[in-house]
Length: 280
Image (cartoon, rainbow, N blue to C red; front, side):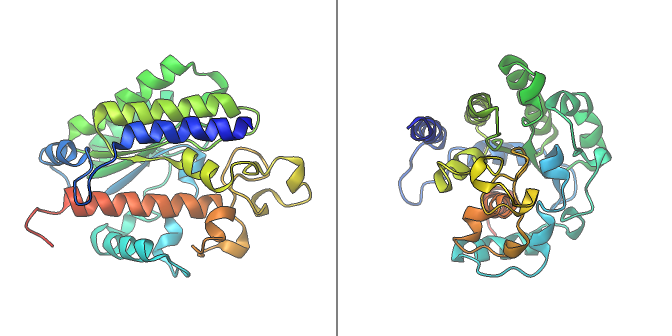
């Protein structure tokens, strides 16, 4: 029952952030992000990935550059948009600490170095997700303030920000939910686009997302057929579902689900913000 309550809280937060709109009405973040993009001075099509091990992993984003199967229509469209627009080096080359992603890091590290990455990369768009490691030591206030500062520095640079909520975590369920809500609130306050990874995981697997639970004993860590791997921390990545975006795959591959959500969000930013208004 408490899982249902947690899902209700998460989706309630998402409703507040997204502000239901009439058909054809632009999302609330479009005009503010167009204003941000008007200040951009770098190379179009550049995408930075700022985050920890869940981001530096080549299971995230890079597989979309290769053959994908069982694409839902909305993803097939989004992937075509991204492949036509994004610079190819941003699929897998912009990885490592000099590019703003590294395992074991928290948003403290991001806050310390964000000015360096913005100077080096000057990305047109940045996808930001810290929080999983932060659950160990950071207070909610520090997490909120530091993440907001990282996002604000990007926006001041003319970099469009796409914030991402963290996934649920074994042994830190309640705090992870609170951190996810903080990200939603920051996105709402800054009027920035949001990928609600946390809510999407709970929507698809409300009772059995946790690969570290007894139900998945005996599987290899990343091979569990649910969304969080056997370590209870990282997204799963079963070999069976690599490159697959069928409904079953989106319930069983945590990295597949993150890739799906991210390509949809980035394509929407490309179409509504990054391309000049007179382009189709």
